[in-house]
Image (tube, rainbow, N blue to C red; front, top):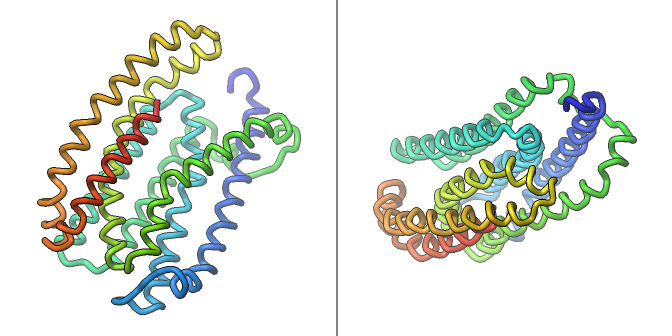
Length: 288
């Protein structure tokens, strides 16, 4: 930013246009495809098609804000201000889980929980936008297109898009499969369990983000010996420190879901939670 401030702002505006355009296209696609998905894909035995369609539209469009959100996260990573990323992620996750607990504890309906989830997604995005605006200004975040900036970063951007798509498939494929195999009510239980278990991945993510500036410096200097000397103990830390966290989740799942849902749901979720913990643990070992 200090070396080429004009170019950096042009790059940010061009990337902002790409991310928000992609979000708009996908959001429209989800909204229009929701009735077809409810009819052909989702098994809804306890919910009418109109209600299921509305729920899918709200959750789908809200979940897609992860796309522009990843853009603002990248800006803060480029500035090496990981403390903001960790604070926002932990804060929004805690707010989301606390809200769901309160809603379910007071007998709130399904749409109350869905609306709360959607609101938390949007609040997280707005928080990232406000923080980034403090470093770059609101004008620098406005979408725009600058061909020179696009050409200069085309190769890198194409590689990052491929990585992002593969990561999304890696993290969401289970939900796609389960949504086809199970009724929507049971799938809702699974989605709640998956969301709860995924919060443990914040630990490995925080460790990786804290090491990002050092790794970037060593990589740029091509100092492989020092790089590996930093990497190996950090990777061991992630692999060992997260084991008791996921083990505790497996033991706590029964009482927690009995309180939040019911005893039958807690019994059904016991094995899925164990597999989710294993899967998220393996995913966490890839963070560093």
